[in-house]
Amino acid sequence: MDKRKVVIVGASHGGHESAIELLDKYDDVDVTVYEAADFISFMSCGMQLYLEDKVTHRDDVRNFKAEDIERRGGHIYANHLVTDIDPDKHTVTVKDLETDTSKDVHYDKLILSSGVKPQTLPVPGNDLGNIYLMRGRDWAIQLKDAANDPAIKNVAIIGAGYIGTEASEVFAKAGKHVTLMDMIDHPLETYLNQKFTHILEPIFEEHMDLKMGAKILGFEGDKTVTKVKTDNGDVDADLVVIAAGVKPATAWLKDVIDLDERGFIKTDAYLRTNHEDIMAIGDAIKPLSIPANQKMPIALATTARREAQYIVNNIFDKKPAYPFKGVVGASALSFFDYKFATAGLNEFSAKKLGIDHAESYYEDSMRPAYVPSTNNPEVYVSLTFNQLTHQILGGAVLSKYDITTQGNVLALAISHKMTLEDLAEQDFFFQPGFDRQWSLLNLAAQHALGRARF
Ligand SMILES: Cc1cc2nc3c(=O)[nH]c(=O)nc-3n(C[C@H](O)[C@H](O)[C@H](O)COP(=O)(O)OP(=O)(O)OC[C@H]3O[C@@H](n4cnc5c(N)ncnc54)[C@H](O)[C@@H]3O)c2cc1C
Image (tube, rainbow, N blue to C red; front, side, top):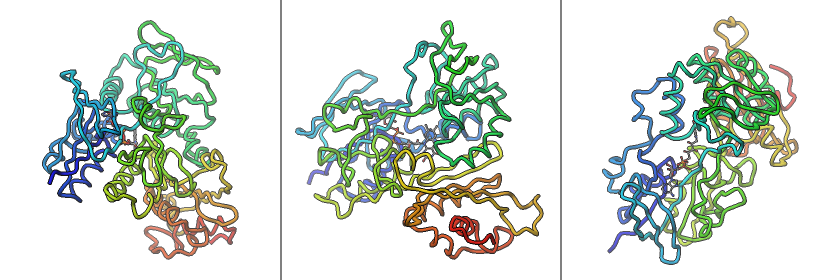
């Protein structure tokens, strides 16, 4: 019997997870992955570590090697761009970018994990040299060269989200004069509640200039950029790094696959597109957010991998037994001495989605008060919850000490739709070398409920 043929577009997190899960689960499936880039498979999540010289070698900053798929019996082709789909014939058109030749390839099932592209800014001067983006291996190499280039003194980072924050730390640590710019009022405001951004803002100011509430009007320079023009004054720049959001890489799909107004691939509850045999995962779709109970962009590797696993488990079912259950959206970041983790919704996202919510902020020392402050770091927790039901919708933890795994505890609570009462009473360990008689998240939930401070 001929093997059933699954074609995967894109060899990043979603494509990788799909391929290994398929090869692990089924013996009678022929798996082929097509990747447009020449390198398989750069991991942008590891870019900051690479730029700060904390990895073994730049070619190691990857999800997997082609051999890893081939060893398991799959096929994978770099430098192969999928240019078209014919859903009636069940074929994709694949262009070999080295030979500039195209061929049609049959599929029984097609998985799209073609991801997103970083946004450029449609302003005058955006074609000048030294205006960089922060995604993928080619940009990573150029950013590293720039960080090591003594001729580059002034670096303007546009976008104060988590990627712009990573970039700002890299260039500040490389000894550059950094200006971090954004239209929002406080760095990281779209990720963290205000109390947290207020703690972090002085740390930004210690290491760089901030230009918040600034709209970018254009770039000036002769061949390479020398200035960023904004409605709130100009900034000198030998290098500009744009980290101002992403756009789904789906223009090539528009005549075949239903896309929403922003270009995200529309999927049903089973992550199928408008064609039953074509599924889509990863940054190019909007997954169900468990706390929001609606679809929204959650552009994380963790999301892509969970979607891939779900797809593979159900790929040959006429109707999968259950819909994709959704994701929470959890992430962590360090910024100089501070480390934080967030899960689910926050003030900004809940407000934007029009979701009824309230906020609570809790600060404490990590260990009992008799432990001197030299060994008793300050810890901060924010919780976002539904005012009527007390369902926990989101939360974040922050400290100079690494308490980011508490973010995963919050993710679990959000995923299981726990309430403040559940979290306030949840049995966690106590050992004074690690925490208080009540654990930090117990205390934060008790505080949110207005109970007397322990
Ligand atoms: C700097 C940075 C740091 C990050 N850090 C984290 C982190 O710490 N944790 C986390 O969870 N997430 C992180 N992310 C997000 C994470 O990288 C993405 O969510 C994840 O890569 C999405 O995977 P994907 O499979 O949807 O697509 P992508 O990673 O966008 O990859 C899509 C792939 O498809 C290929 N492709 C596109 N179109 C075609 C075509 N027509 N034919 C063939 N190939 C095609 C592209 O070349 C690309 O390789 C980070 C992202 C960046 C940029």
